[in-house]
Length: 274
Image (cartoon, rainbow, N blue to C red):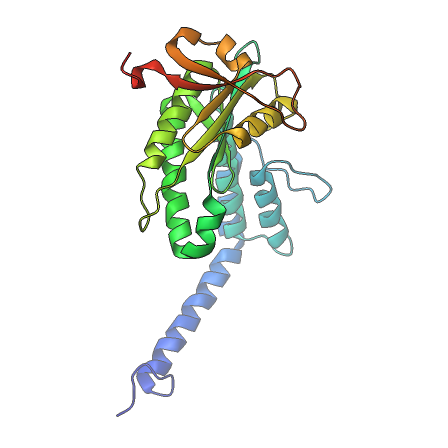
């Protein structure tokens, strides 16, 4: 008995013929002048500015790069899908632009870096599926806590994040809470340990990113932390009520960091029962 799904069977051939006709119809509609113009008109009235498409431009935002790829893909012949894709990018950029600026009027921000201690060694044994499951849970927990503490995740760094806060106290408490949340995650018997480093300064803002010496200092401080530990520089404690924390000064030396940098291991006092 012939298989109906076989394209040699009459029903199979009819299905393929119908599929090909549908594809051809969709292709024609996608390139129909009136449909393309309708999609283009929608983009013109959408909030925000038209994405930068010039090949000579050097886009710094990922959304600008995506817009340019969409533009180049449809440069031979305009299509409705091209216009709708550009509209989606435009709406996204408009939404991002409406977010309140992270920087305070003084331009000071507290920078947080986190990562997992011993993650690479475990990942080599665990396999891709378990690694991806762990990273999704760790990043979800950290991102949620950063947001609730009025911070913003600037970028994911694989097994950690970089985030910024206007308020130094929010940053310390977010770092500590993220460590506790991550330590509660278990993947096949493995319990990850998060470490965190904080530094307050005036980094240079580049689009949604931050650059400069202050960013490098925060990263170096995070590298010096142990599993479950939050390290903060004196500049971060200076912008908080230091009496709210148990502080222990740590010896600290790192390439690219000032020799006189003072670093403390900090724990909010409400966790000590005091």
